[in-house]
Image (tube, rainbow, N blue to C red):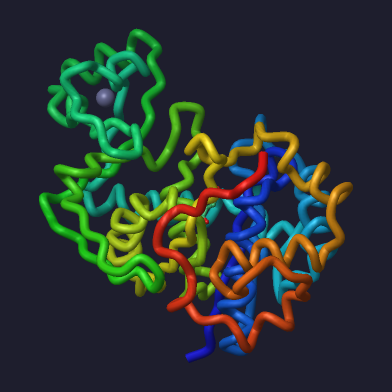
Length: 308
Ligand code: GLU
Ligand code: ZN
């Protein structure tokens, strides 16, 4: 079967070093398999994203020497333009009786009684699942607009991550009923990403390890919606020397600053070294790395980068 991978950035700012590592590995995974790479623009949150950032991001990828076969700033590959597909999937979940409205405020959701996950997220208590019809009506009458959650079964989902190995979660206990549509009507990342990966024929999902904990619920949603889940490959996160994760707010390591300081082959070489593909940082073009690439070399844990 042809490998179809994707890179799915949220255009909410300039990419940083960590995003570049995920992009390079997604590209290498596809190119070393003679597959196809889709570039999907994850701009569901139109308040925080913009086509301007998306255009910048595409320019930055090209500057690095990373190309793609489909997608970019075309309506079919922009989540903000794909609402009709999410709507359809939402109806499937509704028909299966799996979604329910949640009227909780943020503070109710964060209520101290709820156990916290490793990633800092809260396992939702299922409070609104237990509302009576009369309670629901009263909340509706008071004008509260609900978010929509999908009911998670007491089911262990184990997946074999192509980089990190076995990862398992019990959906009800470790994940909890999660939001598939926000109270402002916008569909949530978890639903959109599953629908898009399925409809775009994506069978290899390569992305940062911060999303490993989303993989079980996504694999489950794929099955519920009648799709075959993709294979997942979660890539190491880059940490600053103080152990902090690099983020978009580290302006000194975003693409704007990096393009001033490095030539593309220097930056690609540095990333390849972090990825375990080179013994030392040395200039490299992405295509020169193809014969060196194998997941066996890529670190399973986060990588501390020696500069900030
Ligand atoms: N859009 C997400 C991000 O930029 C990535 C989603 C994914 O790869 O599943 O963080
Ligand atoms: Zn609730």
